[in-house]
Length: 111
Length: 114
Image (cartoon, rainbow over all chains, first blue to last red; front, side):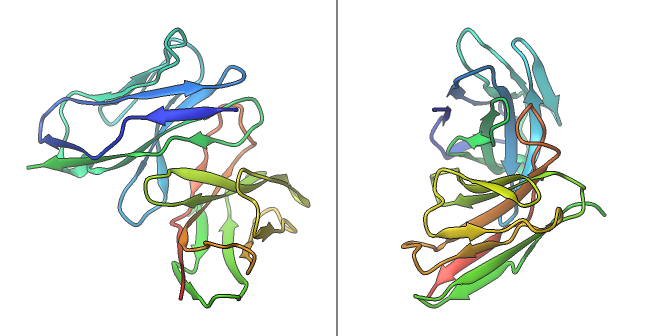
């Protein structure tokens, strides 16, 4: 079946540090890939997505590139802020199936 | 404003009772979903519906039931058969299922069994 693996958290960084959160996937088919973000006590919001190989999704300074050869979709940001503290979920969808999520990675950014 | 509304935000249930969580959307989406979130386990799919009067089981459907009588509404009932119901429940919708479409989420309902 489909699955998503994310790096364990929490990830603790100082403000303005570089962020990478690793995400790899397995899928029966050609998936679309997503990053969602969850702030405390809230639902999830789409951060970015990519629907085909080599596409780069980007939003609010975050980026992720769809790498079919390594089945990866790592999330990066050049300079994190305290306001980026949240839980980040990598997810995939294949054909007409519902989203499959990773376990989430908590990011804590210290001033 | 368009969006997804879940109610209530917090819900307490006694053991052995059924309880229904509400989910309403005004985005005119055909597809709706229920996910369960437990600490450190990400989101797991309970049920989803592609169209009115149709729904499919997800990965953890045992102990849950749903209905889809209206396009806007997809209530989830947590039955007494669900052995460990304490969790955060998230409802979502999208234009269709899959095909790279974005899912929009509600604010969630935190259910606690007392």
